[in-house]
Image 1: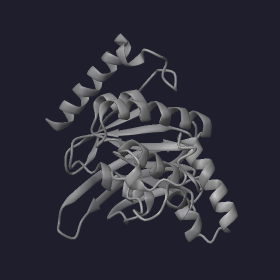
Image 2: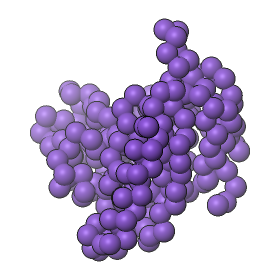
Image 3: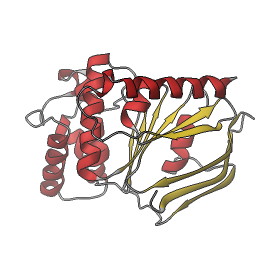
Image 4: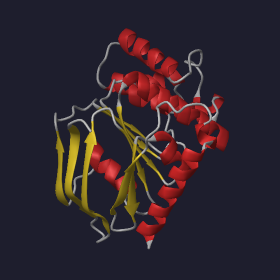
Amino acid sequence: MTAALVSLTSLGKRFASGTEALAGVDLAIAAGEFLAILGPSGCGKSTLLRLLAGLAPPSSGSIHWSRPPGPRDIGFVFQEATLLPWADALANTALPLRLAGTPPGERNARAAEALAAVGLAGFEHALPRELSGGMRMRVSIARALVTNPAVLLMDEPFAALDELTRHRLNDDLLALHARTGVTVVFVTHSVSESVYLASRVIVMAPRPGRIAREFHIAAASPRPQGFRTSVAYAELCHDASLALAAGMA
């Protein structure tokens, strides 16, 4: 693995209620890596992502970046698309640039480019209500990418979508990662999704969240045609399922 972009050391998070969400998390994430964080609901996956994003401080331990990220160096895709219902796809995508004071011409051009990158060229002026769930999530991803972030944090973004749409977006995300080289940290509770997407999978144990196991996925990215039905994929999913069950024991 190349030098770490960000390192977590003995990271812990305890909320004011007394709930201990994370304890003793040690993790190094390399630049350009596609890392999946797999675990059951309530194991602290989303909390870990929010600590990485700087949306909340850790209670213990440290987060060390090789280069401190600026306000537009981290893109965040939430579980819901969270689009402004009165704004079209172009305006929703351009929102981070508008908040940063980017001139209208530049921000609209960059937003149109980001929408094209996620397969939505021609839908710039569509309102959220005119888009399918998968298309709304594509807008959300475009909005996260429009600032050209070094890191893309994704919190179960495809969980509410139908299987066919989810599979298509998985492939599109891998192609996007291959084109841009952005570092992706992807939270999921789906074994099959984690194995399909990631070059490395971190399996988390239940609260307080901690790393139970990690393993690497030795497969080309983007995935070759037929990978989902291959014996290698089935074996990797089996290993991940066993690791997840062991972590919950």
